[in-house]
Image (spheres, rainbow, N blue to C red):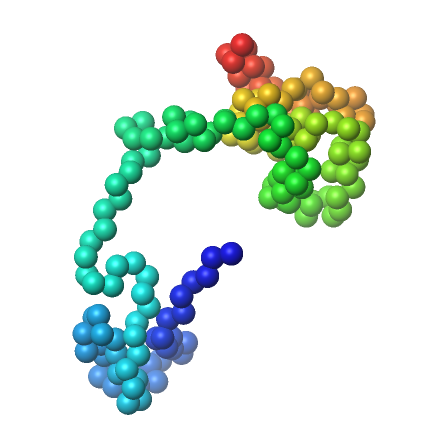
Length: 172
């Protein structure tokens, strides 16, 4: 887990300033810090502290390297997905909050359906086109049925059904 460096400055949360602006601590140098009650305090060091400018050396998008061109997007195969991916997606999309339990997710997992196919069913239910595309590229099947005999196409609205079928035809 990433940590954020703590800043040594004070934030005043009052509707009116407690001190006149002239009495607030001033930086003696933007690189040295400020004087606070007789001692020196260094400011936060986020980014370069020597005043230099930093330029990003890589580009994203059509004129640079995009994720698909770099082999990242869609590079996962069917077997790269597991139970944890299903649970994380279930939580990420807020399905746990709506359902109140993991019962529906556990029911799908107990049917011995491959996790990538479960993810496709969930993504189709949510209308998550980027996830659907990623899963279809990984080899998910939209013909796999759940306990009620419903497929990802049955769970999707008309627009998502057309997207899934259109993407599958284009891929083939």
